[in-house]
Image (cartoon, rainbow, N blue to C red; front, top):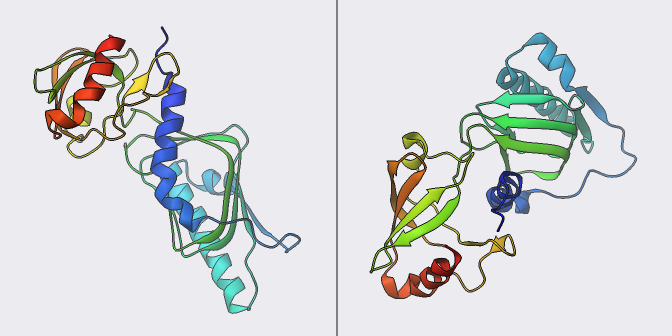
Length: 232
């Protein structure tokens, strides 16, 4: 049976991470409104540091939005990323208190190297981001197969899938996150398993093997644990 692919797992994690932002994202500004257009190439040409380049791009967008507001106009600002470009960043791209922003990804890729937020959108409306892929290197999560669990169903041994991290730096961050159970056959969330299993900590036992300590009582995780057992 196949494991969940890295790409699908990234897509699922990205959708969860983006969920709190959806209330701030609306449709594009009024159709036909004259647009102020910026090309990312002009910012990367001035600075090979992609974090610095995006900071300058956002500053230019903010300035253009402020000028439109001062003139009593509705902003319509377009940022064109380079086609198929790869941007490696370690700081989030912050779009705050902006309106009428359209980011054309043009099949570009943002690779976050800091395991932190990639896009932060707040107090904003009419923001559209299209044709853009977000990836992480290293990944900010891990994936594996349940090997066993203790009698109280509080400690779960996981064999980490190839290509997924088990480094101490990542494991140390998993103190109040969530642990989801996937079904190998459907490649989706396990039917009947609890949505959120909260780990208190994760220990690295050896290469490719970790122990997840759960916060829930046995009565809460027992059903999911039995189903997990059938998957091993």
